[in-house]
Image (cartoon, rainbow, N blue to C red):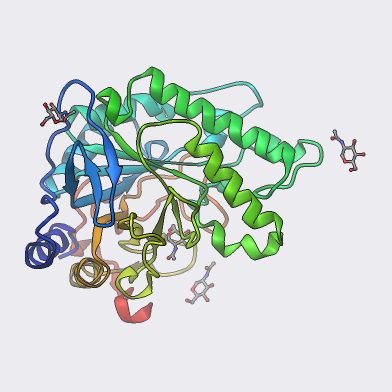
Length: 353
Ligand SMILES: *[C@@H]1O[C@H](CO)[C@@H](O)[C@H](O)[C@H]1NC(C)=O
Ligand SMILES: *[C@@H]1O[C@H](CO)[C@@H](O)[C@H](O)[C@H]1NC(C)=O
Ligand SMILES: *[C@@H]1O[C@H](CO)[C@@H](O)[C@H](O)[C@H]1NC(C)=O
Ligand SMILES: CC(=O)N[C@H]1CO[C@H](CO)[C@@H](O)[C@@H]1O
C-alpha cells in the first residue's frame, strides 16, 4: 500500500481529465546534446517548448552512499518520477571556511550525473539555508563567528557569504554543463527556503533580503527558472511554490498569471523523532492530496518529500531527529520499496493536517 505509484496513477487520471495541455509524467529521457530552453507560463514548466506535468521525489546525496545512488534513482524512476529534487548542503561542502569537500557522499556533481544518466531531471535547492532536519539548517558553524553577522536578513556579512556560496555552486554546475540549456538535467533551482515563516522577526530587513536574494539568484544567469518555496511574495520572475500536506487547499496560488502552481514539498510521512511513534501517510491519502492539487490549483509539479529519506550519518541530524530519516518514505532507508509489514503505525493523514 505504501507506494507512491498509486498516487501517480490517480494523479494522471485527473490530469488527463483536466489538464490535457501538459505532457504526462512519463519519466521521459533528457535528450542528448544541449540547447533546449526551460521557461514557465501560467500552466507549467515549459521544457524545450513543451509544457510538462512533472512528478518529483526528494533524495539527498548526503544521506546515502555513492554506491547506492544508481539503484535508488532507478527505483525512483520505476516509481514513475521525472525529477529528483535535492538540497545543497553548505556545511558538508565548506566545513572550514575556504576548505571545500565534494568527495564521496558529498560528490554533488556525480549524483547529478547519475540522475542524468538515468534520464531524469534535477531540481536543485541551493538555499543555502535549507532546514531539512540537518545540523544548523545546513549553515557551516564557522559562519556564526563572522563578525557582525546576522543570518538570513539584509546584513552585509551574511549576504556576502551567501552570495559567494550560491555563486560557487552555480559556477560549478555551469562548468560541468549541468543546466538544461547546456544539455544537462537541471531544470529549476531554489534560493532560500520557507523564509516567510520567519520573515516577520526581521522587520523591514526581511522584505529587503527577499528582494536581494531574488536579484542575486536571477543575476547568476542559470538559464532555468528559480523558485522560492513558501514565499507568497517571491519577486518576479521567481516562482512562489507550496510546501505542505494539503497544497490543494492551502496554496494561495502563483503570485502572477505567468507562474505555474508547483508543490515542492509534500510529506510522504513524517521524519522520525526519538521517543515518538513514526506516523505513516497512506497511499490513498497522498493520492487524494495530489489529485486535489492538480484539479483545484492547476498543479503541474509535485515533489514527494521524501522519496528516499536515508541515513543521517555522523552528527548531521538536527535535535531529536533519529539516525534514520523518513524511513517510511516510498523507498526505505536501504532503498527498498517500503512495505506495510515493516510495522509502522498508520495515522499521519489528510485529516490530521
Ligand atoms: C529541443 O527541441 C528541438 C526541436 O524539437 C530538438 O531538435 C532538440 O533535440 C530538443 N533538445 C533537447 C535538449 O531536448
Ligand atoms: C561591527 O559593528 C560594529 C558596530 O557597528 C563596528 O564598530 C565594527 O567595526 C564592526 N566590525 C566589523 C568587522 O565589521
Ligand atoms: C512527540 O509527539 C508529541 C505528540 O504529538 C509532541 O507533542 C511532541 O512535541 C513530539 N516530540 C518532539 C520531540 O517533537
Ligand atoms: C508546510 C510544511 O509542512 N512544511 C514542512 C515541509 O517539510 C519540511 C521537511 O520535513 C519541514 O521542515 C517543513 O516544516
